[in-house]
Length: 281
Ligand code: C5P
Image (cartoon, rainbow, N blue to C red; front, side):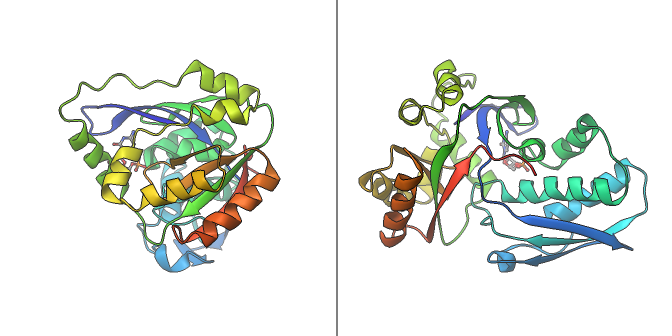
């Protein structure tokens, strides 16, 4: 669920969103080194920058600055989350680097101080530090944990190439330039459906304000969403700023079958069954 409000004076949009961590993750380790560098492996390694623009590198450097340390670290990232996919994979790497370096350098900073460093790195990084399920407000960095009464079963349909998050937000602004944009909100019914892990109730409440803009930039996503519905998904929406589409299934068996059908539909690059909420290990 992502409700996007008006643009703020700082250029970010006021959000009300439900973040939900799922069982797809990158693995990050850190070992002592003179400087902060990153080595990326895994299926999405070639699409991931390995220089200072890598969010894990920026996170480790920001933490060293905050703690007034001169320490470095070699970060090893095994990248399994698609890049520029609307899944906050870069944010997950930043959060992983913060946790790994906090331990490596013996800092043991309190959660609130790590959270402050995280918020400076990106709107979704504070949530990636916590995992689980949470309502995010502000630009996404102000979090309130949300109870979920059981496991939820999802299928992620990925695309061959990414979408730029700033571009998707810009397109949304263009599409709504003639409308008055209301304050963003998360409906209480959605929180109730999560509390009881009621997939049928949840299906009617999934919504993403960025979907219209992602579809305008990538019309083929309409075919992916239609294929998921035809294959029996309870509901499907674009994830974050896209292009990944996320489908809700009633149970693990339906999610497995849905993933197989979506993968064979020719409307996505891959389809993966996952569960949520996932905790940060
Ligand atoms: O915070 P983050 O670096 O993830 O944001 C990436 C881009 O997404 C921003 O530069 C901005 O264009 C857009 N964004 C926004 N409002 C938010 C979060 C992100 O406009 N609340």
